[in-house]
Structure formats: structure tokens, C-alpha cells
Image (cartoon, rainbow over all chains, first blue to last red; front, top):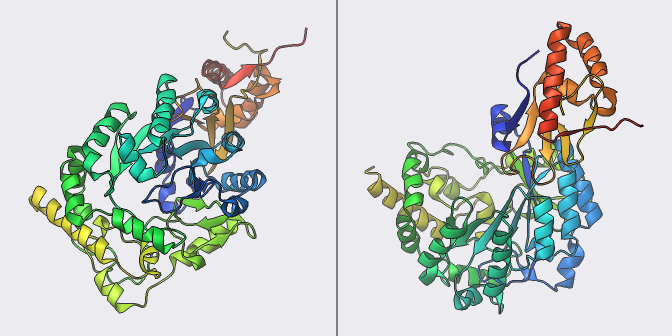
Amino acid sequence: MSDDRVITTTIPEFFGGRNLYAQRKPASFELEITARCNSNCRHCYINLPADDAAARSKELSLEEIDSLAGQAVELGAVWCLLTGGEPLLRHDFEEIYLLLKRKGLLVSLFTNATLINEHHIRLFGKYPPREIEITVYGVTEATVRRVMRRPGMFKAFERGLGLLTSNRIPFRLKAMALRSNLHELREIAAYCRQRTKDYYHFDPLLHLRYDGNPLRNEEIRSERLTAQEIVQLEEMDPERMEAMIAQCDEFITAHAAGENCRHLFHCGAGTNSFLIGHDGRFRLCSSLNEPSCQYDLRTGTLAEAWHVHIPRVRALESQNPEFLEKCRGCQIANLCLWCPAHAHLEHGALDSWSDYFCEVAHARAEMLKRKANY
Amino acid sequence: MSPTLDTVYRHSEDVISRFVEGELLIIPLVAGIGDMENDIFSMDETGKEIWTRLNGEKSAAVIIQELEEVFHAAPDVIRADVLGLLDELARRRLIIAVEKPV
């Protein structure tokens, strides 16, 4: 008999302590319950109009979500991130949320906060999410309107945030660094740091559309900051700089991690997590939309996707000598947005590369070497 | 109220318990149990044996008797362990005492 009784733990402690992260076990999954959104953000990789009937008709039904969540629990998943599109657009959001909780999943939510109402507050008050993460696009009506391209969104966002705050429901704030809000990023950072429950971070790296829409992709490219602008923003953020310098040896490695290796996937996609798309397509990660890398859960099972499909995808190799030389021999790959998924979004091939990603990675490496006296 | 040998418990409907990789996880469903972001609950082997017997029908005395056969430990040790764990589980609102019919 042991003296230990009830042990409180966290998901990372539980999986890390049992070495499960090294064993390709599905700790978590993203559930993309819609591609529709009430906003029309210029940089967004997925958003479709809120009233898009075709998009709605493809969405997983409540019954399908119930079945897939049950299969995820059978596989051992403990944590589910509800994402979209805007998840709160689903009229059956509460049913989805509660069925996931009642299956013994910890549930997190990504939202733009503009649709949060008293009903959601009561729901989250009684059945708390693991966390709520909200992206801030601006702190003035003009900037928010420029990014989200819908009137009244800043007011709606502040109303949602106010409801969460006054009801003591914690949330984390983050930002996207875009051409359209670059002039306001200092104010956005200050706004977020004042209100976020723990930390604030911004993301300056934009990837392209999942649907490949050429007009929307042009808009995304026009929102991308230059490599120098990204580096300047990072240098102005002391917490980010401190973290980057502390991890300098991981960002600038003595040897290229993929040297002499033809395998495309060196990331963690499909190792401890997966994604269920709004249309029932299984993906190793959010960005991996290459058709042959997806698996249709409407005609198959999650167990087959996890046990058969993922190993097949992760075994894919490149036969492109230019790619192998340029990217596989790169010692700053960990500073780069490159991955097979983003390569496919950029140029339609998993083993292509992006000159823009390359410029950003090299500018970041130079800055890091300077800062860390490398 | 501390558990007695006659007390019968069941799992609270405010938590969900699951076995993941052979480990028992107790996951809070509602506010006020743990802090949601960090707290899931787990138990050692003894705890698992006790938890799976808390079905709203077995008294603490019955559970102790069954565990004596599983662990072959001194009855006093098992009794103290079971009553101690039941007390802790009840304080954490993970189990609920079942009312006896009048």
C-alpha cells in the first residue's frame, strides 16, 4: 500500500512524466467546427462568409462530432481545442462544447470574442474551458475595421472581453503583426499585457489560404511584413528576445537537423496531436492541406487515420535535390516558417521553398547572433 | 463528515473519470473543482482499486474487505488507507455519500 493519495497533475506533466510524448500518443486534437467567420480578416487562411451555405453544408454534424470525439477519447486524447473559423458561429456550439466536456476532455477555445454573450458567460462560468485564447487585431475602431473588414467589430470585441472580465473568466490575448496594424502594435501589446491572464505573444508569420484562393492569397502576401520589420518588432519585445536568446543553440544549430535525410517531416505533426477539419477531413496539423496527406473521416475511422495514415505521411521523402540541399542542410531551419505544409500552401509542393521565409529566417539569425554575441 | 465503515459513496457527476494509458484520470466538469487549467486528478494503484469500487452500492467496509484480498496487507493499514482516501476524495468533491433509504 502506498502513502500517495490523490495526485493533482497537468496534461504536460501527465504525458511528459510517462514519456508518452516520445511514443506518438495522441494527447490532444484540434476540432475545427466551422470555416465560416463573422469577420473577414485580410490575413486569414480559412475564413469563409458567415452565411456561406455551401461551407455550412460541409460542416460536421453534432452526431458526427459526437462519434469522432468518442473515437478520440478511445485513442487516449485528453485535450481538445475548439477552433474555426469562428467557433461561436455554430448554433449548436453549446451542445458541441458540453458533449466534449462530458466525454472527459479538457476543452480550450480560440475565438475573436465578438460573439460572446451572456449565454456563453453562463456556460463558461458553470463549465469552465481549460483556456480561452483571443486574437487582438487593433485597439481602435479604424484599425480593427481595416483588418476585420466588418463594421462595429471593435465594439463587439470589447463587449465580449468585458463580459469575460466582469465574470472572472480568464483569457489569454495574442496578436497578429500585419501591414494593416503595424502602426498600432505597441498599443496592441500594451492593451494585451494589461488584460491577458498570463502572457502575451504576437505572430508575424502569415501563411497562405487552405482553399488556395489566389485573390485572398495576394491579400495575405500584402499583409506580410518585411524580414527587417519582423526582426525590429522582435527586438522591441524584451520577453521574446530573452526567450529567443535563451534558445539560441536550438535556433542556430551546429549541424542541420535534416542533413542527409530525405524525409519531409521533421516536425511534431501527428506525433502527439492531430486535427479534425470542419468537413471531416483528418489532418496531421492545421496547415497540412495537401490532398494526399488528408484522410476522410466520413468514410474511415480515427484509429485508422492515427495508426495507418499518419505513418504513411510521415514516411514521405523528397527526391528534389535543390530542396534537399537548400532546406535539409540549413542550420537555421528552426527560425524559419518552412515546413512541408507551408511549402505546399506557397507553391503547391511539399518540398518547395519560399524565398520570403528564407529572408526572414536569415534576418532573424543575424539579429540573434548579434544579440547573443554568437 | 468523515467517512465511516457504513458510508456508501458514488462518483460525483461533476467529474469524469477515464483510464488513459492504464492510468486513472479524474477530470473536473464544473467550476470549483481544481483550477481547470492545471488540475486533473490521478491516483496510485491503491487509489484506482478504491475508485473503481465507488459505485454507490459498496460500503467502505465492503471495499476494505475486498482490498484485503487484493493487497494481502494488514487490515488496519488497509482500513486507514481506504478511509483516508475517501475523506480526501469527499473533501475535493470528487465523490458523494449516498443517502441511506429511511
